[in-house]
Every structure is written in C-alpha cells, then in structure tokens.
Amino acid sequence: MPTPDNTVSLLIGGKVHSQWSRYDIDSDLLIPADAWQVELGMPLGQFPPAVDIGAAVQVRIGADTVMTGRIDDVEDAVSHGSHTLTITGRDGAAVLVDCSAAIFTAKRITLAEVVANVVRPLGISRVRIDAASTRTSEKINVEPGDTAWETLVHAAEANGLWPWFEPDGTLVVGGPDYTRPPVASLVMRRNGKGNNVLDLKRTRSIAERYSDITVLGQAHGTSVEHGKHALRSGVKDPAMTVYRPKILVDHDAENTEIARARARKCLSDSRLKGFTLTARVVGHRTSAGVLWAPGQRIHVLSEPHGIDAVFFLMARKFMGGRGIGMVTQLTLKEDGVWVLDAHPHNRKRRGRKGRKHKDDGTVAVDVSQ
Image 1 (tube, rainbow, N blue to C red):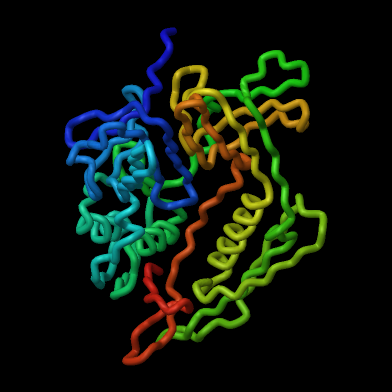
Image 2: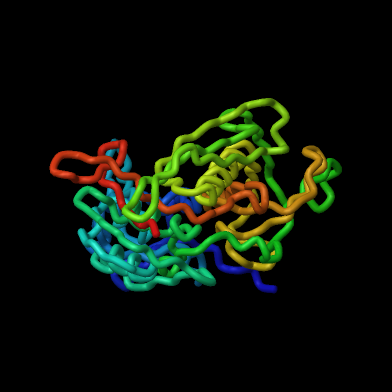
C-alpha cells in the first residue's frame, strides 16, 4: 500500500498552513479539551492575519482531521537573529471548560434535552448520544457559577456515560467499547525480531490504590417516606494483596445501588492510577494506516515485561518537527477497567437565601431522578 501522508497542517480561514519546526497534538479521554501546539520560524517576520486568537481551526494529518476547535494563544517571539511564531489551541470542549452554563430549571428532562440546553448556547450543535437507553431526570437546576463542562459531566455521569469530542467536532456522550477488536499489535522481543516500538515503559503504583472501598450514604425523608441512614456498600480489589481500606461518605448515595455504583467507580479509578503502559512508536498511524486515537484497543506483546494482553488506549500524543521525526506516544490502561456506572449528583447545602452550594463553594447541579 502507498505510504500515507502524515503532514501536519492547520486549516484556518480556508487556507492550509504546514511546514512546522515543531508540533504536539494531545488527546486524552480523561482530560477535557484536547490541545495542540505548533511552532515555526518566520525569517520575514510576517504571518497571515487570519491566524488570530479565536479563529476556527481544523488540525489535520494528511487528509484526516484529528481535531476541530479554535486558536487559544498566539505567541510572537523575537530574539537576536530569530523570529518564532507559536500557536496553541483546543478542541470544542474548550468553551465548555472555560464558560458558564446557561441558567435554567427543568423537570422531567431527558439527557438529550439537558445536553442541548447546555451546549447549544455556546455554539455546539453536533451532538450524539451513544447509549442504548438514558434516564429522565426529575429535576435539573443550573445556577450562576456552574461551568458548562461540569454540568455536562454531571448529566452524563447520572447515566453512566462520559462526554468527549470527536475529530470532526461532534460532541459524543457515551462510554468505552470493549467489544471492538484490537487495531494493532505492539511488539517488543529481546532478539528484536518484529519489534515496532521505540520504547515501552510500565508504571505500577500503590499510591491511591485500595484493597477495600466502602461508600456510606443516606436518604432524606419525604412526605411519604422516612429518611434512611447508614446506607452502606463496598467492593474489594482482589489484585491488591496489601490491606489498604478506604471509606467514603457520599451525599449523593440515596440507596445501596447508588452506593455500590460509586464504590465501583472509585475502585476503577484506583486501578487506572495503579497501572500504566507508555509506548513510543514511529509515525502517527497503525500498520493498517489508521491514525492512533483514544478509545482503541491494542494488543501488546513485550517479552521483557512478561506482557501478552490487550490494553485500552486512554491517551495519545502526536509529536514531530525538525530533528525529531514523527513519533506518537501512547498511554495504555488495563482493558475493561474504565467503568462508568450511573451516579446522580444531587448534593445539597443551604447557603444564604436557601441557595444550594457544593462543598467547594460552587453551585451544585441536581440531575437526580
């Protein structure tokens, strides 16, 4: 097959810009707002006026779009004998992270309606809900101070989902798909035969790892039902042989099912932090010509590490430039560990005039059923 084009370019104002002296393109499922940065020298000290903060951008590798967003920063540095332009930006999540959500209150509202109310005022119209079914919230109350991203995450988590942006700018609310076949194999043998990895690092840590996680909750009384106290649920990690218990008090856990879901989520987060494979490979594509992307599943065979298993690609970083070549850094986690259980957020604290606040001083969003 012909060698695919891996030229990194920016489409700004209908014009394509490339020939960078250095570039980085990051994407991580756990970090909102994927980011990119490019740098080039300008011996004539001139650059197009369309390259300005806030300009819409498509980041491309060859003919494939890898990110859609806007320019955040333009840095114009001049020193003796050099003039360098550095441009950085983020994808469509940037405006949700930076800006406040529209203020609204609604009852009996679906997830799709919540998402639309949050993102459309900020110019995001392409949305896809990847879920077989979603719950209808009895009430949602968005107040001043709530960021759009926090509101979106709370609504998604109440349905056991997570938001991210696809390369074409579509907001997706969904979850990991562990049924997909691996897109590639990373090989590192001692004799070097068939090796296709520059380096492979395994990091294991006991920090923030727990053998037992117990969640305690309570349900407030209503006009038709008494309150419930001492709600309790726990999970164990059989892989953790050292006794390291963790007890959490969760005001959102109004029944044992929610408490258990919260415990499972905390345990999966613990396991995610406890094991990471970091690989660097040449180029930005798999052997089949597909660009590396978070959410892919990858088979890893490493004789020095004693590994022969499938892993989940949580993050990837494209890097390149003069003297660097084209390299991709892959961050891999255990397959099937990132679990998203439905967890409503309805923590309430009374402030002045009956206003509801979260413990950190920001306003709480109620998307509970």
